[in-house]
Amino acid sequence: MRSGSLIEVRGVNKKYRGRKALKDITFDVREGEVLGIIGPNGAGKTTLISLLATINRPESGSIHISGVDILKDPGKIRASLGYVPQENALYPMLTAYENLDFWAGIYGVDKKVKKEKIDFVLRLLRLEDRKDDKVRTFSGGMKKRLNIAASLLHDPGILIMDEPTAGVDILSRVTIADLILELKKSGRTIIITSHHVDDLEDICDRIIVLREGNLLYSGSPGEIMESTGCGDLEQLMLRLEEV
Image (cartoon, rainbow, N blue to C red; front, side, top):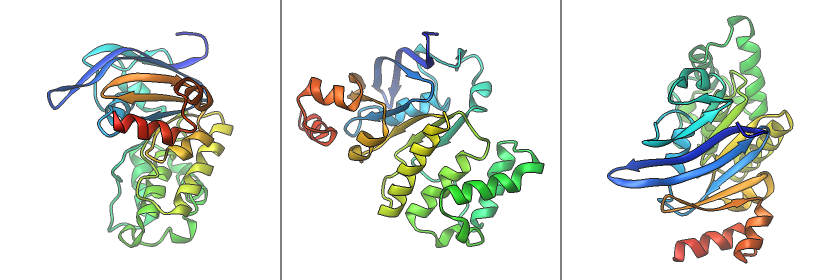
């Protein structure tokens, strides 16, 4: 691996529903970095996230995480990943605590520390006062926060988040942004897609920009704005959607 690179993506191609969703994508993610992935609808963001999370496989090219080829040993990689999909993976008729208890079992959390882990992530996502309430009574933002809490139960070193702030309330957006910064301080590596690109300017070390499966730009938010002549990432997104 390149020095300092935790994730290496090289020449990745992927088709989705008969069209090429990703075209020869190459980039690195450094350990402890927050990487944002942005682009218009259909750019390939979710497809790329699904590959990094080992849910799908590239048709060509390679992805290595901590030096491990995801095609050869995806199980080893999954143990170090926390994945937050766009759609919440929760049971509405169970309480918040019961949902987390279920996911703790799936992730193989030691029974001796399970309660401690569950209580910790509930506090982290500001849900401790709702732990005994059924998830069907939760707002969209609360469900998203609980989904994120579940992804952290096994203390993953890498967190992959697909549109975690889509359709959530302001409190949840702020809570999620604060959480990402706290996780970064603890040394975690975070990859996030979001349509709220103004959020990403403040929390991401680096951004990659996709359009129609192509990687157009890669750099810090400031570097991308300078190279594109845009005042902010939102202006860049508007330009890409007009093309």
